[in-house]
Image (cartoon, rainbow, N blue to C red; front, side):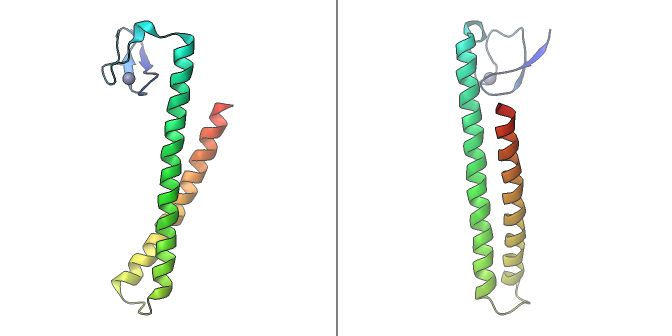
Length: 108
Ligand SMILES: [Zn+2]
């Protein structure tokens, strides 16, 4: 018995399964072509997720910058929150950028 990754949902499953217990993909009817298109769909989906995260990170960063300049009291909790969201947004953006580059590299 070997552990393989389901081509559709990427969960670890036994190769003895006839269908994936997580997403119910029929393992007996997998052709080379079907595997290829499933892989494509999966990488498109993960790319989309990364893009969405990147946009959220960007918005968080911009919102942080915006409130940072709007607030004049450096002691207020809003000011601290603005600084925190600038830092988190920036780091999150960079991390996503790297993940997108790595994901692209894996394909070729
Ligand atoms: Zn599955």
